[in-house]
Image 1: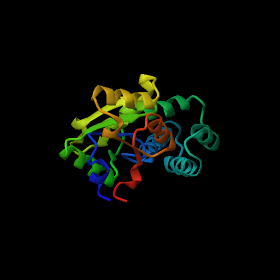
Image 2 (image 1 turned 90 degrees about the vertical axis):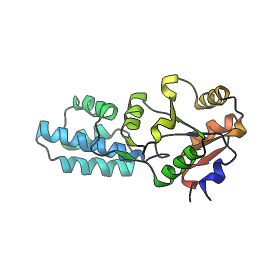
Image 3 (image 1 turned 90 degrees about the horizontal axis):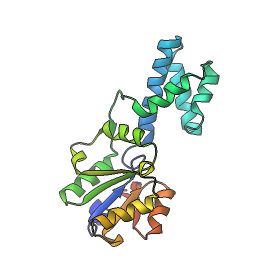
Length: 202
């Protein structure tokens, strides 16, 4: 289905960031790379071995407790956890984050059709902003309005409703594009139409 079939009767589209507009792992794996390089510089331990361990652990078990597992495997001091956490917030990435091709095309079509585009993202606001600043938006950034759910300390459903209210729109005029059950549930609370990002240009 063409993307305009999803949005043709909508005036406003709301997106999450991670795994919707780009892969979350593209950010995290670069953070792990920078951390491994830092450890090699300070501890003379092989950066590639550390990165390989972290990547495999992340791919198999996710990001939880990753520093502790890495510290145990490579005999790193607990004090390095501060550096690890700080990199997640402030890392200057070697490579820009690239939008999924289907989402880039969708966003470009929304701009051409003069639809309003919002990003409502969960997670640490400083980290999410760092991701946004290091994404290759292809000129789309000036058409985006961003809300950080954790900074506002509001449920996403409330933020969605506030966006609709501020634009004098009803739920039928908008669409949420997400990638997880939480966003779907938050949309359903106010009867806001929801689709999974992978469905676009499937």
